[in-house]
Length: 113
Image (cartoon, helix red, strand yellow):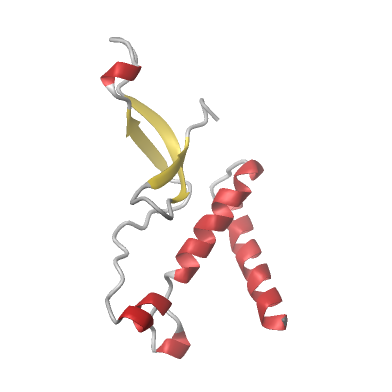
């Protein structure tokens, strides 16, 4: 019980730090929390000899090339069918996490909220 409670406060503290560091609005707390848990589940553990849980279970190296900095600026392409001739081709957003099912990122677009 104490270990679980300590882990919860570590995750919440890291989530708070992520939001404050990037000056993001607090309503994105769930996205930040999910991202923190996603990253923590893919982090090496000292007790496993600096392997992740997945590496210890499957004996395959984990790919981390898709990791991005939380809160970094993103630019998403807008298809020509969804814009007029003079509208911008890209839309600026903020990276807020990873999709668990698809190989995709979660992006917050402030203009669309």
